[in-house]
Amino acid sequence: MIEQLRADGSLRHLLTLETLDRRQIERLLERAQSFVRPLGERPPRSRLLEGATVANLFTEPSTRTRVSFELAAMRLGATVVQLEVQLSSRAKGESMLDTIYTLQSLHVDALVIRDAEPGVPALAAAHVAPHVSVLSGGEAHVSHPTQGLLDALTVYQHKQRFAGLAIAIVGDIRHSRVARSAWHAFSKLGVSDLRLAAPATLMPEREEFAGCSRHTELASALAGADVIMMLRIQRERISEAHLPVGEQYFGAWGLTRERLALSRPDAIVMHPQPMNRGIEGSQVRCTKLPGAAYAAHLGAARRSTNCSASYASCESTRACSRKMVPRLEPIRVCPVLSPARPVLPPAPPCAPRRRCAPGRG
Image 1 (cartoon, rainbow, N blue to C red):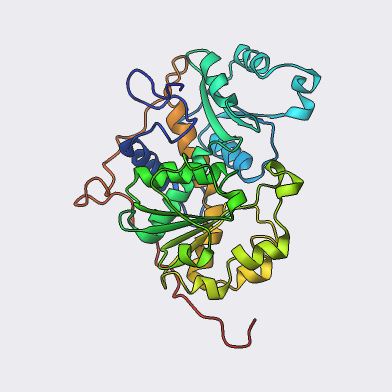
Image 2 (cartoon, rainbow, N blue to C red):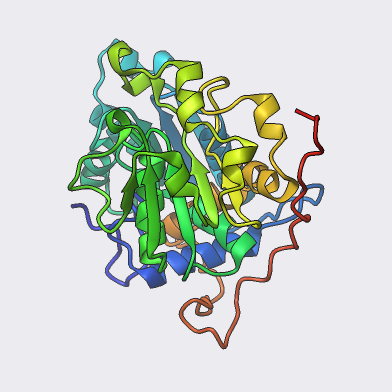
């Protein structure tokens, strides 16, 4: 596995959360929290990456992740280059490494890569020049580290802790890079009750997700849960023969008010977006979730710029050997390591959980 750290212990690449320890993940979450601003306020800006160039190489469709990385790099002072694969020389048969070598010759300092093939970000990291950093914007079904950081930050902002939480991950876990990175993050941060809920065809292999309980019925997974993560059905990675039938899938695995009532009263609901309407949910069904739960559902998308890109980019590219970007201020220890020294400011209180009135759908 590719080493992600520099000799001084700072993060050079961000390919996966699997090899990061608890302290390193907490440090990234701290950086993320320091940049969070309420909607309506101007986003924070910095000259931390002034003079650096960041190239986004996305060979899969993306809205949230691509825009998050682009805005984050720009707000940190970098020049950003977007490569549309259908318009690049890769459409003529050029290899990924050829593209990377070309970008290096043009003084690109960081590459953000999303690709449908496993191993592409690691391949790039193994061949780039010493001053270049590689960040994964999503690797096949394997890993999505910035989404894992975003999920962890969202949970912390609502729950102010990780220890003692029961987190249910529901849906297409077999094909989900979001689920794998969430597992890496939550297990490192001290969540001991991680539940996987999926039909047999969408459950991961037995050797994966060590320490998680497995549920073939949704009710048992939701009972007493503090956090419910609903996953998108990965249509692009499932053969037609195994693709769930919309209404049939929703009937067994969709989140309804009645099923939500099995969780704790202050449970939050999260979804990485985009949602397959009519399979894991619909607009009508989703907007009828209680206020606090739905707030978290929307908050995950709102905070994607603040967490997913800014802080991974900043951590990985802040000390390019050629540009000598200045360091950030020292980071304090996260409260889950030192309860006496709170660092992440408390999140604003959630609205009281409201029940829909009878007859309101």
